[in-house]
Length: 322
Image (cartoon, rainbow, N blue to C red):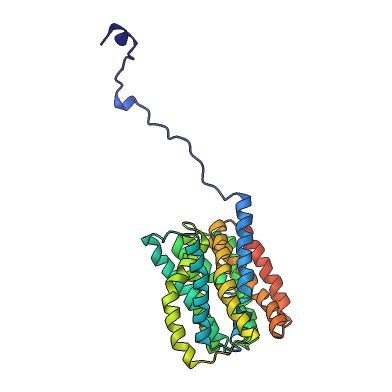
């Protein structure tokens, strides 16, 4: 070592460990709410999904005019999987990681198979208006599943508004059905539970992969089951492609089963599952409007009153901190 090196080398002074101050962590970004622009975009996406879903029951009613229920559900899944699979192949999307497949199976069981099948069976004996108001309980059911699955903790104001909205929907349903539950209602309540699980799991997965890939892979995963179901059902059920049945099948498969879920999952990923689910409180009222114009069903006097109450609940849940 040269003399210059010795002169310029810094002198180290030992300091007892008890006298050293703990290191100060480097400042980092403080977690906070999503930017306003992101929240608005997420709300718009979720609202578009709700609008797409509101046409599901009328399109199913059209499809059932010429196609049997089991054939309709399985063909709907096959067509939607073909569209989704084509998009995944065209964009060369990488196969999801192994840890995602269990969640995708829940999404498939809930929104690809379970909900379409149970609601289609219900619509054989129920009007679309009645089915729509029963399914209006889906936002509250989804919020409960979200708390159990993701650990979300909405505020008391949020829960109060959600329960109020659910109470309004229940009152409307009881008034419309004369106070007696039917087999169709049991199908619909089962559909609520399984769909809420699929929505919750899909919203969680949409934070790790694009929403359209979530539903796309879920549809592809269920394709073998739907193909097998179609092969069994078609020889034993009616199948007549009229204008209504064709339009109903195509919309339910592409508009509702695929495109609607694409924007819905993107919305849930942006604003959270509980808040996005409350936007669905408007879905029964939208379906009532479509049923009036597309199916000629009678719109009762209670519907406008329910609409006002439900929209008020939506406003509260969207402002409440979750």
